[in-house]
Structure formats: structure tokens, C-alpha cells
Length: 421
Image 1 (cartoon, rainbow, N blue to C red):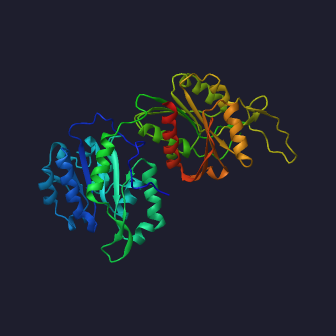
Image 2: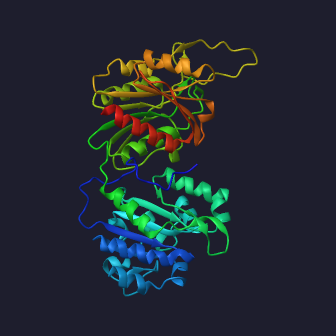
Image 3: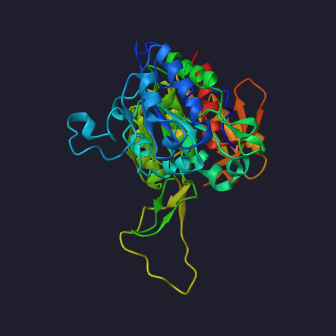
């Protein structure tokens, strides 16, 4: 369901190897018994040469005094969302500074309460308002710690998944004896591990830096009249996951999407959105971008048919008798674009099949000049996860099994990096 706590892969590395000499680390301390371990985390970051700042929730102050963190970091601690009346300059805006200049934001111990607030965008304390003020390039990390039953609660897991799908990196929790006397998952990750993972992320190269990625996403619609259309149940979630994974890997992303809910659209400084409706509009928007793309990901679910002769300009009246609706195939988006594919360009497609999937996907791979194709089934439509099979030219099929779409997207980007050489 969620990412491994071993977070050494480079697909979500947000910083180049040419990192700042003194990266700014903002620690968000929450109210849990493990809050005392955050002292060591702050100390280790300080010894690494980082500029360390601390924001605390009201509950966190019950476990560790703000003075402790101030002494460790040599910076004032943010522990109140409303400053003193005499505050001036940046100190008058604790929800903005230093969050708006942070290179890394680490929430620890991330309690169930704070995870829920982060997932929903609630800002009611210094930690959660800081999270809302981070720059797009900031590496966001959360380190859960709580009772094992709380951790396993479906609501908590849904919020964890939502954060991860938004690009947050999770470290932990670990299993063992808990302060409440129970055994199981819920222990805060070791401070040395937290610092090591973040430091690796800061220093790791981004494998798609300097590359252009074109992503076609979401459904297309073929209108019958001004209010009716032919389409499908694509949600755009896979396209969004691909865009976030590609951007995290350093790419400039051109994202062309059919109609999807706003929450299924990716956001980021290197992601450029173009909205379309029909297959013809999709081809037109993609043509100019295709020529300069290093990697093309065909995740759009194209409506395969449209009314012959075009849409009726007025709403068709309802009739009690049978309606005959002549249809014609829409232009083949992938085949049209891939016909212009140049050496060095990599094009990866998707095949959603209800039967004979391997053979049909393999045929599609050849006919549409894909370098690889991902086979899935109707269960993928609108869901957060599905079962996938990777099919690559000259290679036996690989059964990836069930994966969340964000994990599948990271794996696709990993393979694309290899194909690009």
C-alpha cells in the first residue's frame, strides 16, 4: 500500500548534486512521546552544517521545552501561530518564515492528528501553517510515530497514502516495543536514519535533469451534441502520478490532459498543463511538444469512436423510439505521434484489456511503435491501485503485480531512465 521506509531510490530526489552548502532544514515537532528524539535529529543536522529551524505544536511543548531546541539550533523556535503584539518584520509572520525559504521540511514525530491536517491542508498551528507555506522545491518528509492500532486505522492509512501521493516522503514507522506497552509498528525511525535518508536525498543526482517529458493523460470526450458525449471512466490519476514522478526526477513536464477533477491534476514549477477535450485536440496539442520530448508517456484513455459527421450543434431531442447513432473511429493518437518518433526518443504506452491481454498488448507495442507498454485491466479506472504487467521490446513480460499508481509511476520512470541511457 505504501512506500518502503528504505528510501534510497532517486526517483523523488528534489535536489541536484550541486546542493546548497548550508541547506535550510525546518523541523516540525508534534506532540508525541518520541518528541525527545527530535533533539538528536536537530543536533545531527546542525553538525552537518545545515541551518536548522524548529516549529512546534502546542502539544509538543508538553514533551520538550522550546528552549532546548533553541539552544541546539541557535535559532528562535516557532511555537505560537500568533506573534507578540510588538513583533515586526519576519517575526510578525511565523506561518511564512522560515518555511518559505526551507529546502527540507521534516515532521517528527508525525502524529495521526498532524498527518490528517497535512493531508487535508489544515493550518491551525505553527507546524501545519508552515507546511502550507513551503516553496514547491522543498523536500517534504514525515516520520510517523503512534500506537500500533492508531497506525493501522484505515483513516490514518488513507491520510498517509494521500501525503505520499502528493510527493511527501515517509520514513518509518519501525516495529518494536511502544511506550504504551504494546508491540508493533509505531516507533519513530532512528534519528540517525532520518538524517541519513534526508542527506542522501539532498545529495543525490536527479536522473531526468535536462530532459523533457510529454505526458498524455485523462479521458477524451467526443460530443454527440452540446451536452452529451462519448467517453470513459479514466480519472487521470495515473497521469498525475507519472507527472509527479517525472518532475521529482528532474524533468520538465508537458502535461496534456482531458477533463478530470482538479485534485487529479499535478502541480509543480516544472509541470506545464494543457487542457483538451477531444482526440483531435489531443493530437494537435501534442504535435509541437512531441518533437522536442525525450520521453513520451501515453497514459490518456482516448474515446475510440465519435459521431460520424461531427457533433450535432443543438441538443438532440429525447425520443421514445430507437436512435441510430452512426460512429466512426477517432484518429489513433499514439500511432499518429509515434510515426514521427526520432532515434533517441522513448515512447511508452498503456493497454487496458478485458481479455487476451498479453497478446493484444504485444501487438499494440509493435503496431504503434512503442518502446514499452504497460498492461492493466478495467480495475485501474478511477482507482488508486491496479495490477500491472510491463512489456518491453525484445524482453519477456514482467508481472509487476498489484501496485499503487504512484509506486507504478516511479517504476515506469525508473525503466524510462534506463531506456534513455
